[in-house]
Length: 219
Ligand SMILES: [Zn+2]
Image (cartoon, rainbow, N blue to C red; front, side):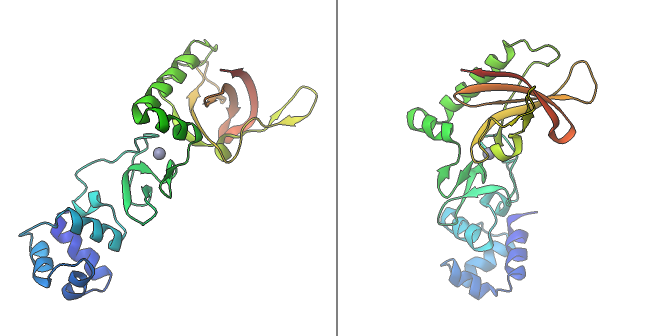
């Protein structure tokens, strides 16, 4: 869809006249009319205001020319999953889990952003991938990438030989990890999780059932 149709549709859905929309984004009614006829497209400032007003990203207003991905975890983004700044303006670089209320949610990302930003973070990720691969876990395929994972999703409870149950992670923290199929087939797969301090490899059945710890290694 073109910007002109998108603006028309969003305006109509919100029950606004051209006049009313114009007032809200500080332009003339004629300007709105020209946008909707496709004679002009809104300038950067107007796009920002429209984005906030309609609660859609600028990318959506422009007809989704970019496939947006979170620069932190790599997930693809749509308007529902894109992060926002405190003032409600979309931050189209990150997903809402990696970046919330003007801040990165990842503790290690915060630390890395202080010393070198995205580049350092990618280096860190690559380093973790290498560290997983040199573990040479039997049956585990080569690790290619790590995703950002919320602690609450990957904090499995392991049963120790003495019957006690333990968890190693923090539900509220964010980790880098992945799920990998077992090279020997079967129903179990590998789960790997890491942060700045440790690497963890486990296996489990579907949906994390019956997890077994393979390696828990301090870095
Ligand atoms: Zn993300």
